[in-house]
Length: 375
Image (cartoon, rainbow, N blue to C red):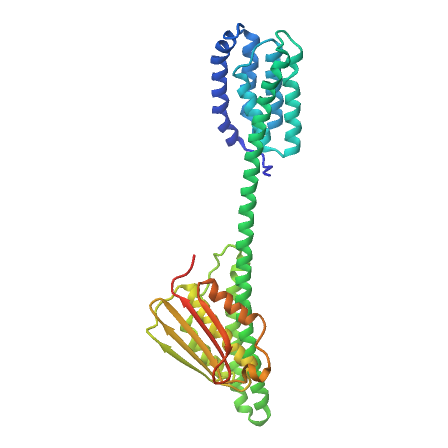
């Protein structure tokens, strides 16, 4: 429920309503009472004015407005005046309490208003007796029910918007987590392999160990730069942080060179004419290649890898195969968040993903992505 107290702008917005009901009351009370054989005098018009003007504060102080309005309407009826336009002001006051306050206090306020309004049924001049009870109840119960319905609908809408905001935030956090996983996983795997090479060469051929150490420095710097760019949006929280262009298939040759320095020979084949891809599709395709090659580096043992990229009019296709030990040697398919993350990236964009043992041994990852992003 929205407990924010309305400002003066909203109060000024209620002035026209109060003026309209005041005009209706002043112009309609005389004819309404005359039709029932009663002459309206000052004792009839004074409560009408008070009840209508109280509505100016109906959203800022709804309970106080209801109290003033029901006292004015009660006095009007106890003095023997018949039902008239003053009850429109009471209707609005009851509705305002139900629409802008919690159910329990609003129900208590409406019940108190009903008790005060029905006093004229039993006391005062021209008492209508029990015949006047049902109309009095209707003038309170109906606007209370309508106001409660409006408030519940408004709260449901607010909850739906908050839930949607939470869902979008969770999706963004998941996306960033996946990005961090890909960047850090690939970088650490390459650094680990290059460090192993450097340690192996350090004693036997120290002059060649320098090359491996330089590759470690270059790989760690690139991974840190990409990680810093990915986390910049999280730190800013508004998505306006300056960002380098997102990785894409154009960076696969650089990835190949990096992995060659880590001891994994990779060949890259491109079929079709490379075209500009939607950012999300380009990034997803690149991450599939990157994560697949990282898995080869981690799990395939001594191996070579081949990357095939095919551009078509309606889709882009990537395939990564390796000559490693594959599933047959390990006894189980690779597990972890890498394959699941790749599959989620691809299917979220309307593509297809497949991973499993290659026909001639090793492992194969294959993905097709439509060139149009899904909304």
